[in-house]
Length: 112
Image (cartoon, rainbow, N blue to C red; front, top):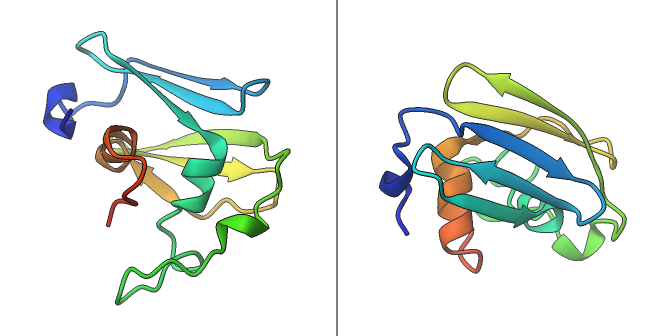
């Protein structure tokens, strides 16, 4: 499924954090729901602390992310992204709707 399937010009119609399951659910305009594990989202953080700004190489070792990671807050950024703050103190990553949709469609490939 491509990010175009969700009409990426608009945000999801609903976002729910499932703390018990450690997952984030995004409900898109077309009725499709994506569910992403916290660990996957956190390890795919696109911020300059977690990724090399020039090469896109991952700097964060996913093995260092706590197994009991929780989502502390979600803050909308305009109409295009969300800032997620985690229990490990990290909160500088902006996740665009396109980035999250791409991550959901191919969890083995971290979006660029």
